[in-house]
Amino acid sequence: MKTLQFREAICEAMSEEMRNDDSIYLMGEEVAEYNGAYKASKGMLDEFGPERVIDTPISELGFAGIGVGSAMLGNRPIIEFMTFNFALVGIDQIINNAAKIRQMSGGQFPCPIVFRGPTASAGQLAATHSQAFESWFANCPGLKVVVPSNPADAKGLLKASIRDNDPVIFMESEQMYGDKGEVPEGDFTIPLGVAEIKREGSDVTIVSFGKIIKEAYKAADDLAKEGINCEIIDLRTVRPMDYEAIIKSVKKTNRLVILEEAWPFGNVATEIIYHVQDKAFDYLDAPIVKINTADTPAPYSPVLLAEWLPNAEDVIKGVKKVLYK
View 1 (tube, rainbow, N blue to C red):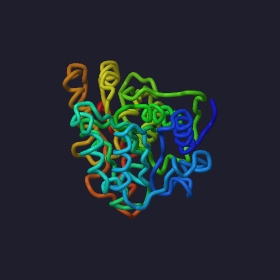
View 2 (view 1 turned 60 degrees about the horizontal axis):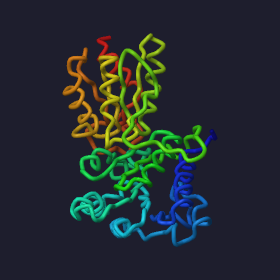
View 3 (view 1 turned 30 degrees about the vertical axis):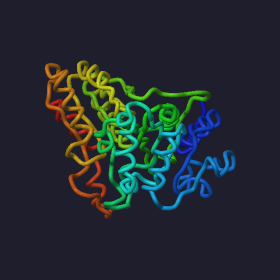
């Protein structure tokens, strides 16, 4: 094991895969000369050269389309968006081409491509740069959606995503790139679609993913002082989702709280709630609680932003609600 920053784990995953497969390349804004907007591709231009680490103009629709076309012809592109907010400019290529081409071609054209970059809020970036898109992309058949929460998962999941023969949306966070954690060495991968129990517990299940899961850890530490034992599940992959892991945990704890950094309408939490009530309704001892951002565009004011984002105190309140405390 070695300690890496989140950005270093991302870089290591891409570099290891590119050393093993010449069909893999990285393309996006500032990925080459500038070493990545968040330094997630530091040193890659020097190692792999400008034909495999490619700077692009500010034209997401253009370079997303180039990536899709080259994936159809046998390459395995990694397309970096400086933020998934900018992916909205290229979403036609992602949804109408990458996600659908295998079916539309009768299986003749797979599309092994990874679209990666930051999602959700990152401080005072205001309404148009603070949006969470996990549920948007997960709504589309043909796409896989991965949201790691720590450096080890980032490396293992990204390597698996690059090797996958379907398009993968790999969502990071600007506020996690400096996070440090132990990362296994060698050819370390994590299969897509497998959640992980990050903390064992018996009183309530908390499901979350991405950087906001840190608030669940804080809440669980405080609740443990009161004798409340929380089980925390990190989804890691939003689609395909590990429903089995969630159902199994709920059958043990009989209570469920879902923490997600997204607007409350039509999100990942609502999908989980449907499946839990369908498969484990009789095991529930309380209505499910979901915790989201406020139902408004993200504010710029730091005071309002703190109110807009879910936090550990919200999780504590949610847990006590399902425990009737």
